[in-house]
Image (cartoon, rainbow, N blue to C red; front, top):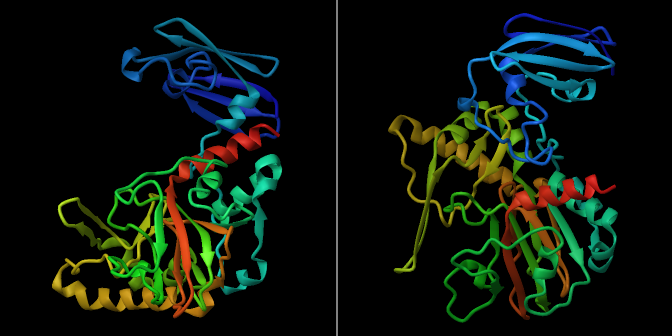
Length: 368
């Protein structure tokens, strides 16, 4: 869209576009974002704002959809074209470059489950992009045809990111053990939960790869914590207020080797009020620490959250076979499993930060 006129005063540049709209741009902001002020075009800024004098707009002229602005007292000329102005139109503070709104789901997602083929993703960028955007938007993705051998989970990680190593190592084992230190290492049913709520930040993505599943149960379950949070916001606003404002103490203590703690709300919001993280793990939650006049109401809210997260209408269920894996957003999607009484079941798991997922998606889109 072209520019038909420009005007200015000491502090503001006014740009009128062909569609009849007019936008105002602060002179200080323009000087801070001159197109020549970046290393290698879109790279890092080459100066700090405090290194600049208090500037004014000394002049502005339009030539063929390109505006030249003169900044005083420097006498510096900088050019900005119509496309740049359109891209940088002032917004309401909703953010630029943010990920799309998540696609919320419940048990209706059961009919859409599909395992992507690992060898195909390795050689087909378009299919890889589809799989990664599914993880971004839905919060989970399924993959098959990996080798059912220890360490092969890293071949899936290599598609988009890097392992986030923790005190559990780069890769951890999920299997029945004679003297289990964790319920995950038993044959018992595991309720819906997020991993590691005692960390700050919580691991963004979790990957679980099946090496052996000869059990008579042990089916995997996933639930969309964001969908549940929005349901609480709509149907139980008082509970939502409590769950988003009062932090809970989480702790993992392992002898003298680890004492991990975090003090965060079960439902976290960003500055726009959007849900960004759900922490729910009754095994790691410590005694609630909050005012006495809040405690009873908080427990009612806590029960609402737990009931909805375990509602069959909120979850999907499937069985992982050898060579299959699930990758899911550990800050959004809760996972659990059914009990089993016989047969071997062995999964390997690891954590990956979400920024590498989003980065890979953008790189694939730029290469189209």
